[in-house]
Amino acid sequence: MSTRRKRIPETARKVFEGKIFDVYQWDQEMFDGTTSVFERLKRPDTAQVVAVVDGKILIQVEEQPDGTRPFPSIPGGRVDPGEEPLEAAKRELLEETGYAAEDWELWREMDPVGKMEWTVYTFIARGAKKVAEPHLDAGERIAPPQFLSLDAFLALADDESFYSPELVSEMLRMQLDPARKEAFRVLLGI
Amino acid sequence: MSTRRKRIPETARKVFEGKIFDVYQWDQEMFDGTTSVFERLKRPDTAQVVAVVDGKILIQVEEQPDGTRPFPSIPGGRVDPGEEPLEAAKRELLEETGYAAEDWELWREMDPVGKMEWTVYTFIARGAKKVAEPHLDAGERIAPPQFLSLDAFLALADDESFYSPELVSEMLRMQLDPARKEAFRVLLGI
Image (tube, rainbow over all chains, first blue to last red; front, side, top):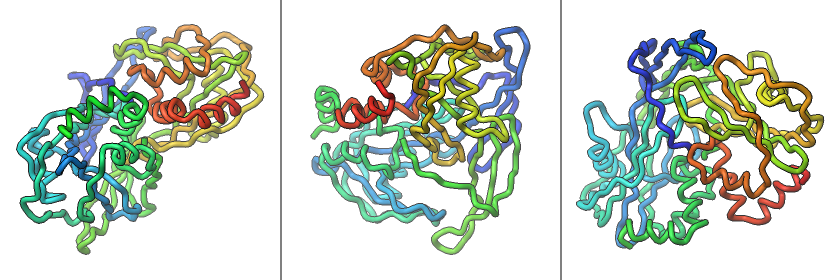
């Protein structure tokens, strides 16, 4: 997964504004001095959470209304306009699971798609506790959370339906490198 | 990397047509019976090539005109309208490197981005040979190819600038699983 960050140039024109995706175009000078119209997308950032509950990692099984099969995921969703990524992470964890935590840390910040200005923030939430009932949108159907050991969580990288493609490479790297996995265990505080 | 394939529904409206990206919207029935406008993108598919030359894998170092630093990649590019993915793979290999091969096989077919109809086809080209000089577009700057052993190729998964994010997870899985790596070696015919 590439983490290269390619920003839309300031001279770019917004040529379409969608529900999620905005499209920008600009005149790019090519290697031979000619110009060509380049295009890039922008979408709301995503905040997601690796929540630690009694030494285990919280995952959920989620459905979306367009008919895909249920899939395992970690809590998360779009960062709203004007919202900080950390606020969005706290809000999504609470809405989707009813859990809250005091001890937060940004773990990873990735731009997974080359031609799209889109950052996925992954936070660690240590010492998460249930404080409310979930409050789901009309477009969400989420089963009560499950709690996995670190090894079981890393094994989700082998589940093709696991819905955090941005994290899969990192989870595989931890399977390959015990020191990397141990550093993550320390970060989780388990 | 998710390989889940989510097609744009037939009832969707094309609301924007860009240079690369088209935007579609449709009314999606939600879990509570209300409807909401859903949005998805479509872009030309990509064909890329793992070319085998005298028992080694061909890679190249590429620059793009928008100022990113040179990055290692395998040959590939957009599938043109009306073109088959295999034709595009053969064309891109020839244009970018001057190499051609007789013995082709589709290896992987992935849809790397959830909300985008975009398939990346990765082909194996066995017995590739140089038959011409490269013929580059004004938007391409590509150094002469280099030839890597299988192990050196798989190690590219650890290079953050490697420009085949769709392949990185698979390359890490081969590092984890000797049987998987051996099957790939057999597929490459080396």
